[in-house]
Image (cartoon, rainbow over all chains, first blue to last red; front, top):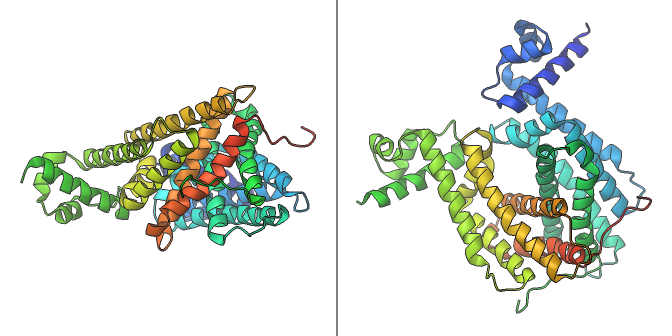
Length: 208
Length: 208
């Protein structure tokens, strides 16, 4: 069997075990067994548990970003891009719940270098959304452009909302049929709000 | 010194150390030293590192929920309640960054019983927001009531957005002056969207 195929099997097994057991409790024995490989071969190919975990994070992060980018047609209007990006995101997290659990729950709290890699993924998602919001505001004819800090805040809000919904959606029964529904819920929440802001409409507290 | 005061000092020290080092790497020696107490006394009062971590999570979660509830006047209109709830939330997470780090980053990934306690906090936040959205939809005269699943999805989206912004806001420079700004950003994002939905206005994809 080519090394590439073997390595992919090992990473598949590792993602499943890390997602279920957590980084610390995951054993290389279980990963090797699930991959149908010997433990020495896993070490030979992937070097260490730490490197294996890093490789899982990197692979899952790249796959998620690629899924979102592939779903978005750069020439489409802003609302279609957001809608398709959200569908791509939720379809991917629903199809890869173990990968999502590794990225969202496991990788962030085991210090460097893992947190750094997940931070890089999150920044890429935030960048995609930041660009979208900036363009939406420009298209909307917002008289005063949205301040940079506010755009950054909105982008973090939207990414946080999507992350939260991905976890919620994966924990529900019948999640497989609801990606579209989840994307529509967030679209309605985010778009109507963003669209109003892009037209310069704001909520202002009384007496502020 | 009364036991109650001593215990509070120990919990203060523990929250600071857990936030900085993480659960595994945190040492009882460092916690005792920072609390100005002997290690045997910390064990006598708080029993074990696991129990100490649980006590930190419980205390920080209760304080956060209490801050949000105290900020909201139940008789105010829905937009004021959301605005004040968000201000209460961001003011508290900004004033207690270590407590927030323990709840948001540390507690979720070290398995039971910690994840369970943080899950209970999150559910309380989601419940507060769910009630608010339900009432907003009723006030808005939405012709068809929002389906329960959609309300749950919106509540998870809003809580996720707030969590994401709390982390982002705490990592920025000059965060102390920006709680109001962060709350206003999320309010503009969430309210204008929710208000439109409460009036039965929706974003519908072309061809769907």
